[in-house]
Length: 306
Image 1 (cartoon, rainbow, N blue to C red):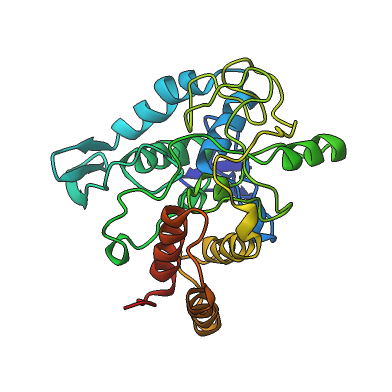
Image 2: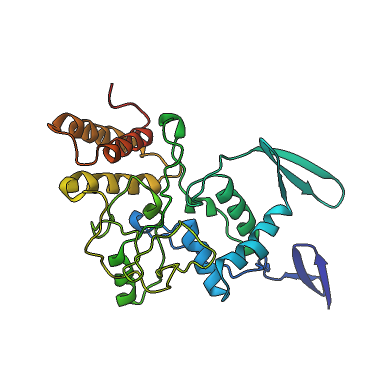
């Protein structure tokens, strides 16, 4: 009996018979942690949450994971120029270089940009999971040129979601929709997002080197307590509108192109137009309302107002 190795295939010769052995899957350098992306669109995990959970699984901080694993992995294949990214492809015989347009820089890596591109391209070969780009959102910027970023500059969360996970013993994570600045309430609990720790009272950046899902990045206490002096914007006066915005953007996040699905655009567009026409007075926060309207227009793909 002889064992033959031919790169990907391995088989044993026994007399005149060849018995093919099961194909061994490629081994990942890091744990092949699956992103949390349930069928319910409200629960789609964000890239920041995934990186933090992966760091916790290896008992290290996100900063160490990023600096020692993710970015070095990225730089083995790519170099960043002024306007393009050069991808170096080598097969042992010759080396080719392909150009990729350089993504726009965005501070929050839950929004598609240069940083999220680097993290995703560096992570995928380490965890052997494809399509990590579904953990970030990308809205059509050409529809809303006045908006440079759609992601919130501060970390936001729903304390009731954290408490529910603690009570049920389920995985604690931070959904992608929490990072979208135009969304002001949780799609699940209809509760305003919080951005100040109920223990130390501090705000937090969207991601830090010591961040842990569900805990404050400053004092590391749980963020499952509702702060009574919350929202900085009076959104409760327009609660029906806020629910509509939250649920509509949730639908867009589940679509591959980050847009409202074609079969829903007409009905949602009609609803948005009716909201504008029915307003007899200005909303409590006009700036927020305009930002939300602009984003909905971008997701629908057409202009609703003159």
